[in-house]
Amino acid sequence: MTTPNESSSDPVLDALEQLARVLEDNVRDHQVLAERIRSVEGLRAGGGSWREALEAEDDPGTLQLLSRTLARLSLASGVLRKALVVELRGEGNSIPSIARMFGVTHQRVSNLLRQTGS
Image (cartoon, rainbow, N blue to C red; front, side):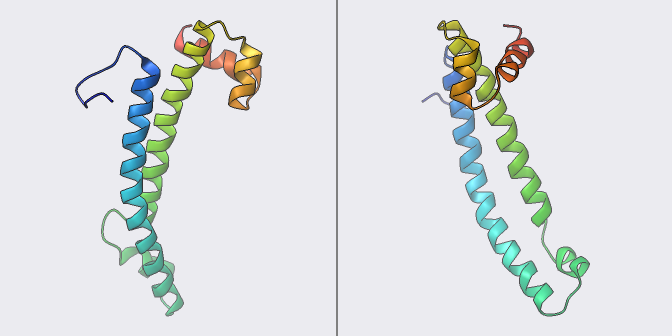
């Protein structure tokens, strides 16, 4: 495993390391998010308005935490997908076979390759 300031010569390993860090951050945020959701549920069930329930939260609130975790995961998984497509293609795998591995169309794989300049 590489350290935060160190980069391997393998972009897929770098992307996996980034994804692992994102998942660890998201685990922490998900624990807070679950507590916040329970709190919002309780306030709402007690007759409070949705506005009151959401405004009673500390920052970052439920919706902010949810957006943050989804955005981090989306970015990191996109980096991994692009790196993997390039590496798999570089190993001689066909676009249709890569598409099957990813569960996407061959057009999607072609688009990823175009985006990376490969």
